[in-house]
Length: 406
Image 1 (spheres, rainbow, N blue to C red):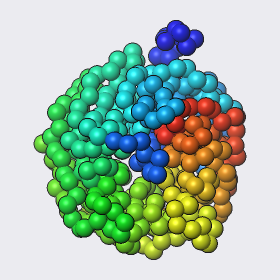
Image 2 (image 1 turned 120 degrees about the vertical axis):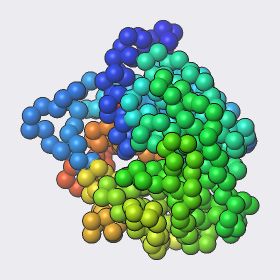
Image 3 (image 1 turned 180 degrees about the vertical axis):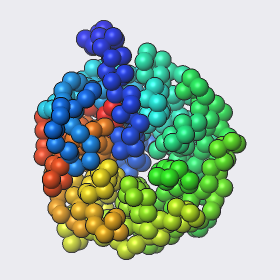
């Protein structure tokens, strides 16, 4: 990477510093599905204030920022982008390419911080492992489906879960001691219920593990359903235990849990709403509530706004939603121990089509990957009010669809 003016030893030091923080759920993954734009097939000083995410702010020093893109899109990147950010100022500096990986539209880090995983969002879908210390690609494995758009590492660190948007299926891959991936151990396709209004088939959009680690939940936009599974941690297989239906045509995209573990929040891409969900850890049953406003106005009109991703601060006090189309970030107060969201307002996202948002590991910054403007914007998160204040200048990143701060 010397051609990009980036010292390898410095990069390794940065990664080592960020490894432990990378395991935090709020900063361990990014992205979502392509949408209308889918390409065709260190310690803190004593007395430091707490931020809205419930952690302490980093004192100083650059940290790594990994970037996802579409390599097959016009003006797309060459693979997984590499940058660094200043936790104090929010300034982002480009450092070239971490690894030349095809269409890495979504990224997640192993809990031990040593290995990065990326989807390869193509017709013949795959997932790829990259060792962060030396940027070595450890290999790719087929997901058994089309256009995987999301992946997550099970908290135990032994299994990688991925969602195939194009074929409406969820895949499981084993992770060995080196961080490399083994052959797929399961593939579950969403064959029922029938597709929702305007949908041609199932579209698995996200797969996540519940906070207690007891269940795996898959959000399917095409069937307006969230599926709950149990993962056999010996065999790497999924068994369905429950289904939660949304309103017909809601188009659920992204689910985020409250840290209390008994409520979750669901972003509905098609009907431009957010729903509070009740969750039973014992049974894995999710109950979807009524749709609520996204802050884009009383009636922005069909096809004008597509809610993307939700984040909840680690203290459970605030939630944030990326609004594509309206190009804003909505802020909610979380009330009644997670059972209620109250819309507080929106701020401009600092770019066009904010596809994904992520907290820095300490929760002091929020990053937004803006797909259509090809930028990443950063915001300071207020510890008192949850207000978002833009910091630094938007960073140019080709077809920015994922920003993963370590």
